Image (cartoon, rainbow, N blue to C red; front, side, top):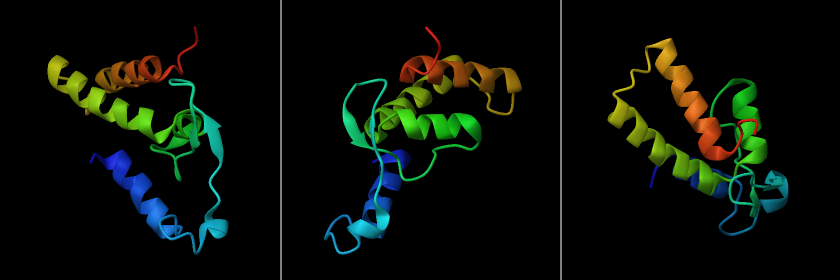
Length: 105
């Protein structure tokens, strides 16, 4: 289970999602994912800071974001991206926007 999936699971447990006792206290918005087109619960918190994190939370389902995390690892390893390098971070952010369908068409 990757970190995005773990965050979703922890949020479900924290909100009583497994037994339903506190479900009303932790209502999570339902979104239509821009990548897969399915309706799903939004991520309980943005996966990153800033406006981009809020956009991902509002438009991408947790399942597709988990797919991105797997793809991100492949890209970093394949291209030898260094996250300390601002240019490499920009490349990875652009790849994320393209993968998730957030880049302007």
